[in-house]
Length: 465
Image 1 (cartoon, rainbow, N blue to C red):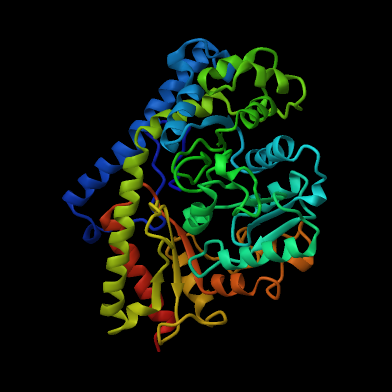
Image 2 (cartoon, rainbow, N blue to C red):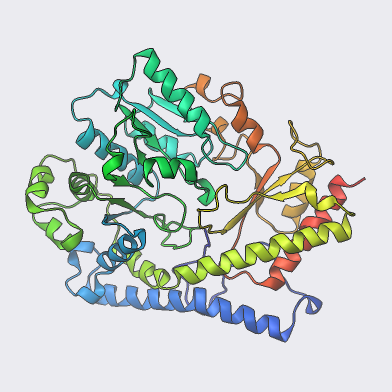
């Protein structure tokens, strides 16, 4: 998601577009004014407010979440309430200092403790995306499920393949190794790409059972660990940026108690979570029976977060507007520079379902063959295209690169037999010739015009004979 530095002084330069626009011919007074307005509203003002918040916390020694004696300076509680409200459900939030393993691993540990207290790890099957960031399978390993993790194929839209998932579930049940209700789905929203079919079946649960056969409390919406979209990662390169951190959401009181005490609460400090804390009898059950991992978010991070929450929807709207503008201009530039009908060779991979509200803070492009169909192997000119774009200062990469942390081949801490193209052929094909590029929340039409031109020019140089 959109990245900007959270600790710079206001006078220091903003993060620049992946390719700078410098020449007079590329700029107009009107364009410069619009760009300045966007940057001011979406980046500078929230950053200045965050710095003011931090200064107050430093002066009053309220950096720890449990030191915040003034409600107006308890930014963790404010942000937790705000995100819980955005979820639109009766959920509680708990802020953690890591947006990856400590949060998702903690979620799996909560599932094991609360839902499967008497089951051995090797009797619980865990399914997860074969296309995701490597922190997701890492979390499964850290939580103790390395031996029972099963990767599920990705579709051409880069989301979970429900047909493959259903087939794996049936196979596991038929084998007798895993019983009804002893299965967990860790559903990752890689690059904000949501499998709406899975969401409809598991009611937005990222960790939960899939379908009536599995009976993992999804009917009661016990856990909601929302990944990608708009609201739970507050790391660098995210829509809300605190450098590191994230939140875990649940409407299961026992899981929330587990999260609070695992994160670092002790003695009577759980009461400072106020309405986001479970009932007292639940808290007392977990207070002295959960290991303290000391992974709670600091009030400093939340001080940066709150001002950004206030402009989050504006950032989303601006991201989406620039994405749509870029898609249209890229198509037009292809027709102009590469020949009639050439735009069919550059596909902006859309969200897979109309019910998913996109946050296009990155773009994924699939380069097609001459006839507009997907290639079954890497196109020979792909590396040259990427190199040329990178020389123009764009941080663009291909998902099929074995060194890419989103490619299952790089997850060599898993069993080698589980991470081969032979085992995951559909995912291997889906990642072929797909290019990935981050966008900024202060991009402008002028910058999108240049990006569209650069994409078309580099494509013409590398792919058009």
